[in-house]
Image 1 (cartoon, one colour):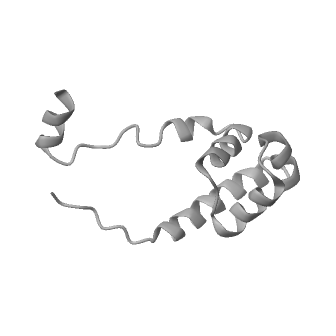
Image 2 (cartoon, one colour):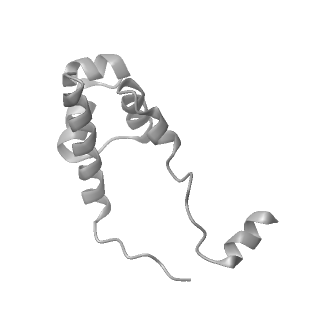
Length: 93
């Protein structure tokens, strides 16, 4: 089975995600403190996420909801293409 080569490390992917979330927060003119209040995620966690990309999945989901981006979380892994006919067969069993 062929694996797709990822050119970014998981840490780099996390930091890029944090940059996108920060850009959305700023576009909506929401401070980190306000996002903390709206999402129920601690201010320290919001700040750490935007700086390092490190956050729990639950906190990320709460932040996405507070920013009106819950559908993006719901869509994760929703449209993953099959890698082989064997995957199709296994899924139908």
